[in-house]
Length: 189
Image 1 (spheres, rainbow, N blue to C red):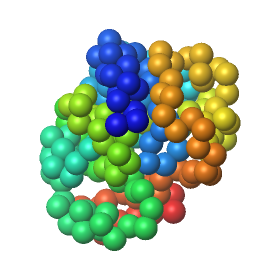
Image 2: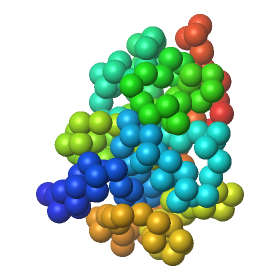
Image 3: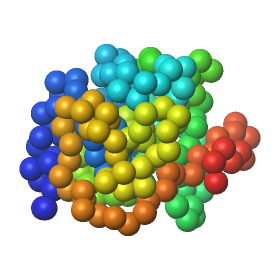
């Protein structure tokens, strides 16, 4: 695999509570262990972001959702299979994640990734990853690696080499809130 060395380096940093800068199924993200509150705090500090603003959690497989959401409606999978772009879902009943990731109302934003690099990294790490856009709070999200600022690059412990040369313009995921009645509310199309 062309990204095996990056995976090994990421695992070392993540296990030590550090931050990585990595390509996702959408835009480049700042990531850490989503179960480690100290690592999550580092992400907020790196982005100069208030801890009251939510971050996204990435999972590798649908079944992993059952470990981190107390009452997952399995109909969400039908919706996600039909989605035309990567979609982050806000779920109620977050469990097993760093408390500073969970919104005051107990919700959590989760995306199940299809990207081979992310999927492989999360499976090897055996824990969910935080993913938030690789920009300072209030600044535009970078559409590809070259747009990531020096402040962000210096604020992480490891920068993935894989896909740095990819200049294809990427966009953030769609975001929906999954309602108790099985309907959804679009937050970001």
